[in-house]
Image (tube, rainbow, N blue to C red):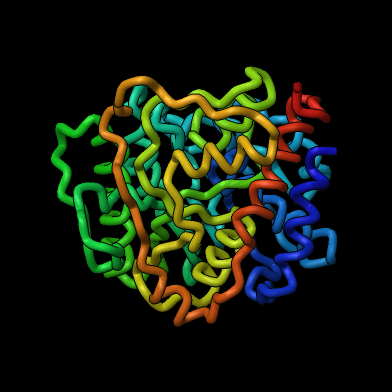
Length: 344
């Protein structure tokens, strides 16, 4: 079962998380079929099976994928299939004690081709969801490290912000995330517990088929094309964080975070070319570089996150090794596509 891979990760992670604050709470997860949302949902399922009384609403845009259906076999979980870019749908949103807003397009191809929906989900939906938060509730907005686009310093601290303009190719996503954070901070100034988490490159099991983010695309190419061909020379640098590590930090931030915004990422700092090479070695697949340099429109060259705030506050020092995380992600993709052995 696909869901079992995720459950195994959750069982290994949950021992490090205090979950008492969720007892008897109503929890709303948007984007519950996405990578982050799937792990948050699986965490809630784990708690329900352990006897923690809570009610979970899992919002999805499209039909739940098979691995999500494996997780939601409980009367305490209700799936809400709705479009958060449509303001007419907001009246269907339930009130909740805890809201995790992880909905939105995370793949560049999707958010660049759907700019208006991207902004609606990050701005209008954020305001509507905060209006659904019960008194004394907790809200976390899943923002992005792309808010730092345009900066060149060695590491990006939460006090910094990027320099891109509203005419940037990825502006709908970048400005949408910045505006979503602004909405959260406005509610926070009125006494609402609203926090933003700027996520770096999160990876791991839980993605759908044909995910176009580089890491997942490379694995899919290895499984079916017998080669990994890059769109450019792969010089852009990324810092990857395994999804279970991100989950641990997000739940701790939600429960006891003292700041308005946190960077959430890992320490696996590597270039796209090095990433492709690692996946190629693990799958015994050649990597093919283009003969001339090309560049994906607006793609940032470097996004190193300063994690001192989140690590100091929560004492996070242990992260899943990149090689181990990639091994688990490749295993996920093999099961997802029904390919047990890489073609030779």
